[in-house]
Image 1 (cartoon, rainbow, N blue to C red):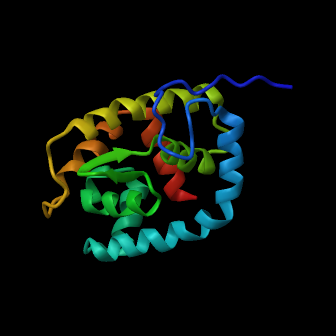
Image 2: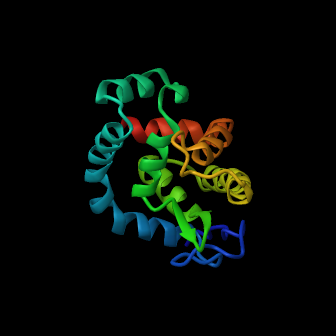
Length: 168
């Protein structure tokens, strides 16, 4: 029996996944979610493209070129909202790190535990900045999401995971 390191990055994990949950639980959640989320990826992508005035071709080009700047911040806001990555607690936006991890793991089944943990800690850094930011997303250019995406874009492991996810 393999022993998995516990996820101890944040003692206050969002509801549904406590810090006592290790990777086996995340893998269980992925299996549960797989049939629900996989068919939604393309639908969400095209819906978000439409709501942000982009064409499917523009989204595909951005993914092909791995150029995050070709996608509007509002596209990302729409995209991650669909997958429960950001939720509101009162007037505060909170990043649901497990949702982001599950999203990454689902499209990178071969990712190692260490890589997943390094992504988790990278997300936590960006999540804290995002949560403490006074920027608002009601602005037409989705500035707050832009700050999160810009932070994440600087994290190589994470951005590679994102591109692999969007290409599957």
